[in-house]
Image (cartoon, rainbow over all chains, first blue to last red; front, side, top):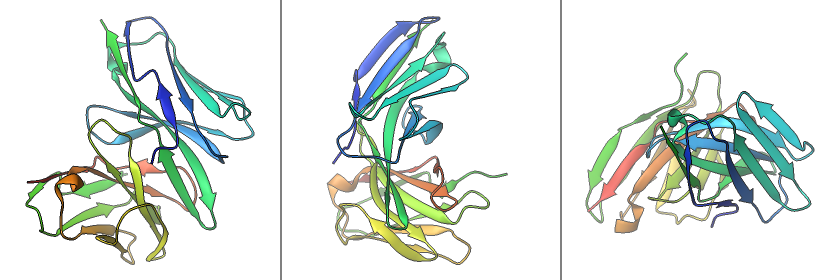
Length: 113
Length: 111
C-alpha cells in the first residue's frame, strides 16, 4: 500500500512558471525524499529532508516539511520543458537495521514551451 | 563511476514461468533494495539485502525471492509468474542506511 499521496495527480504549466506539488503521509517518518522519473525510466533522487528540518533548498528546488500536518511540498521555480516528468515523494522509515522507502503515487508534471 | 545497473532492460515471459533479474550496485554501496512499479503507480518495496541477507521485506508473496552476492550484486527471482507481475522492477543501492540510488529498471511483461 502507498504511504504518501501526492497532490495534484497531474499539473500542466507554462515554461517559466513555478510548479508546486504536495505530499501527505500517514505514519511517523525519519526523512522524506523527492524523486523524479522520466517516462517509465529509473528514479532520480532530487532532495532529502530530515524529520527535524522544516525547509531545504537545492538549486531551483525548495522542499518544506510539516511533521505536525504530515505533509511536504516541492516547489520548482522557473520551470523548463525539461522538468516534464513524474515526481514522487518517498518517506523513509528506519526499522531495526533496515531502511525502507514508501512511495506515493506521484504527480505528473507537464511544462509547456 | 558507474551508477546502478540492471539487466535485462526488457523481458517477456508467459504465465507460470520463472524470471531472474539482476542488479549491480553503485561502486562503494553495500545495500540493495528492490521495488516493483506498476503502470501509473509509485514503486512498492519488495525487499532489501545487506551482507548477503534479506534484512527487510515488503508485502510480497514468497514467489518473490532474492539473493545478494559477496560483491554486493543482487538477483530478484519471481516464480510462477502471474499477469499481475507485469511491471517495472527497480533496484536501488545505498551505503548502509544512506540515500538510495536507483537503476534504470527492468520492464517485465507477463503474457
